[in-house]
Length: 150
Length: 150
Image (cartoon, rainbow over all chains, first blue to last red; front, side):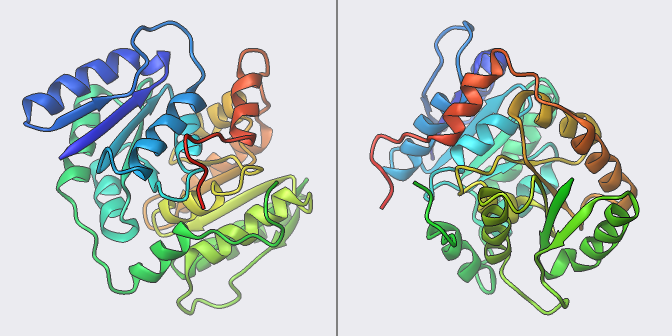
C-alpha cells in the first residue's frame, strides 16, 4: 500500500522512525517532508499530504505534528481527505470502520512511538463498514455551508 | 461567551448534559440540534456548527459524535473553523494556545462526561499564544492545494 507521510519540525524524528518502520513492513512510503528539523508551518505539509491523497499518489496518509491538532485541521480542509486525529488503536480502527478515514493524525509530543505504531497498524488493517456510514462519508466529500466560504 | 453545540444521535444525551452544564456556568448556549436521538448524519450538524462560527453567531463550538472523528472532519471543511478532536484537558489547552481552536470535538462513546467537561473547561479558559503560531493559523484560514478541489 502506498502511504504518504508528512509532519512539522516537532514530529520530524517520529516521521523518520515511522517511515522506516512502514518500509520494513513492506509498504511503499512517500515521504513528503520536511527533510530537516528546522521550523516549518504545519499547514504547508498538511496541504501537501492532502494533495497526495486527492491525486491518488497515496492510498493512505500519516500526518504528524506536536499535538496532531494543527496538521489534522489542515488535512481536513481538502474534501478528498478524511483525517482522524487519534491517540489509541480503538479510535484508529473506528476511523476506518465508520468514517473511511484515509489519513491518520498523531501528536508526536503526546503519543509515544509504540502507541503511535499500534494506532497506525490498526488504521492500516481496518476496513470501511459501508452500510449506513456510506451516505455520511459521501457528505464529507461534498461539504455544504449556508454561505460558501470565499 | 456564546457557545454553539451540535451532535449526532450517538452523542445526543451528552449534548443535552453539556448544554445544561454550560448554561449553569453562565454561558449563552446555541443548541444547533438534533432535537431527538433519532438517527442523523453527523456532517449535517458539523456544517451547521461551522456556519455558526463563520457568521459570528457563536465564538466557540462544541461538536459531538460517537467517536468525535466524523464531526471533527465535517467542521474542519470550513476554513473559518479550527476544530480540535481531544480526549484530555492538556490537548484541549494546546488547541487554544497553539492553534487558536474555536471548536472542540469530543467522542461521546469514548470520553466520559466528567472528562469531557474537564476538556471543555480547559478549552474555554485557554488563550491563543500568538507569536510564531499566528502565521500558521492564518494559513489554516486560506488553504492552498496543488489543484483546487471542485
